[in-house]
Image 1: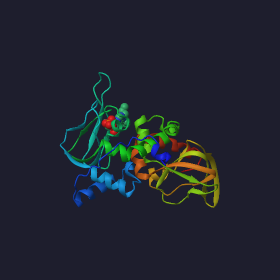
Image 2: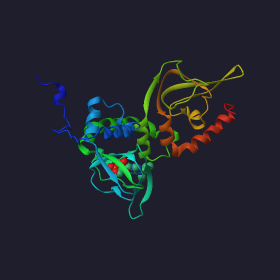
Image 3: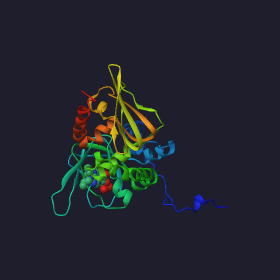
Image 4: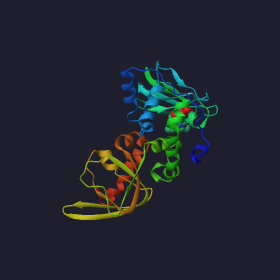
Length: 285
Ligand code: 1OR
């Protein structure tokens, strides 16, 4: 008999795996280039091998365009070396620079995911080396997980007050980097005095804030859906300034320090401004 699964519609037409022969050195360089890229996280061994096999090395001269707005999408790119600028032209206006990428960055996914024309022009601002992944391999291995994650967090991130000023594309990049963590009632999420590595946004539930000073423990207003915490240690390289505990079941989206610095750069001023409230509450000096 035929299982329900094999009858389900599939986008996976017959495909031939692309294998571009590579030296050990090239494989090692790909490994380094994608090590900190969230789109490549949690691939199983076969998926990882297929992606590396299919990648093509491409060198670019300073000033060269790698993607032109309006073109049909063919490749997804990961930067090994060098830097790129992204320009968007709207209507008749002159193109404006909207983004930049360095080593480990990746771009060109939108046209492949949505079968849309290239949304922007990407140009090398130095001599550069990139790894190009063809459309079929990208869609087969990386697309499903990426679009699932972007959909999963899209609505939630739109409602986080801290992030409303961001472009939708910037929230997509944050979604790529997020992980969900769940804590049970009374579980400690952050302990005062510890070294801080993570930033948290509450997806659901509540968290209590306590701070101990000179033997006295003070309790501060609880945090709720859409609130964030854990930013101070990442901004100031100081130990955790308070203890955060789950009050009932608590679900948070979390970002590591590197992603926090890179992706929340545009709202760091807002984050810093908000810490003034902590001072008013005598929660930090
Ligand atoms: P693509 O396949 O459309 C251009 O080819 C790539 O530039 C695109 O995928 C993204 O990977 C990348 N809007 C659209 N694409 C962007 C943007 C962007 N930034 C980088 N890319 N921004 C919105 C501008 C109104 C910039 C947001 C900060």
